[in-house]
Length: 474
Image (tube, rainbow, N blue to C red; front, top):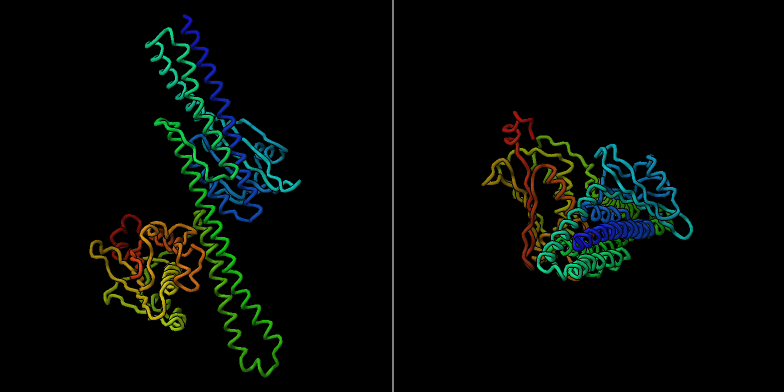
């Protein structure tokens, strides 16, 4: 009887302890989001905040949503991309926006999962004494209770084993078990707090093979990913500074010179100077369009209008556009298209952008005297697609980077020392991959250091549309 009573008391204590620890974890996580949101506001870097919220949502089953709202009630980042830039109007959100400190609210969900109880935790973000926004995370009470129930179930089984093995030492065993369960949770909480404070080198060390050990591993992976994102953010900011400063400085320089010229000198050299300024303005426009396209792709709002088009004229048009740049860099551009190349089902503007990104990339990383070649032919193993290849004789890509080059903001380290003006934003190949996949194709690369790189992508041909006509087409 005493053993049963002590077991019951221990289970009650353990349940209360787990509930308390869960509440502390929720507060630590929302404060971590507030810290990242404050940094994003200071550096005007919404993409990093969006990625962090995505990591929070994917990293925990109990998180129903996470968002960051500015001081005008507009959503700057949300785990549901469709809600970006919308204005908060619900009572829970209004109260969260008005709070001066930590606010915990509980309400019944009526839209996505009706009847589910949600714990909404809000925390304000201040810059000095001025409020700039609010970090909010909604936790599912149902999932949380299920996890506590599972944890208590395991604890109950452990107690039973200890009781059957040694009734006399049952009570001592129960307290030892409690310590075994709570110690790693405390380690997890402390680690989560350190990661939330921005100490991304933190490693949570829990040598267990159960859910707590798995959770510790997930926290470590999240910290590593956040560290990579932080480095990519720094590289991206550096790239943006370069891409904006360089053409603007050139344009400003030529404008100042032209203002100092007389009429006669302007007639002699003014047109050339205007062309230089125009080319740098185009460079700025291209950079800004890449940023906008990247945001649309991430939000799932980019659209394509596929039609039957001839690829050959499109390739010729893009190659002609890059011919002057290639001649200046002393690079040979070659086009080798199959004679019987069928028409493809594609959005001409988007495929033009894909070809331009790949050609620009090839020219950038190919030294003088090299060659960039575009080829296209029907796939032998799948005639419903053609494969387009853009090959260069440049410096190549290390094997460890081949699987990452299509990630947003990723840039291969060490190339700036080998190729002049190799700096970029790390968005071009990400946009290429996204556009090709929207067309139902795939993209990949092959490379060897010192021997060049070949980028390949596939597009559906006219026969694929005919074959799928009964099913609504491609």
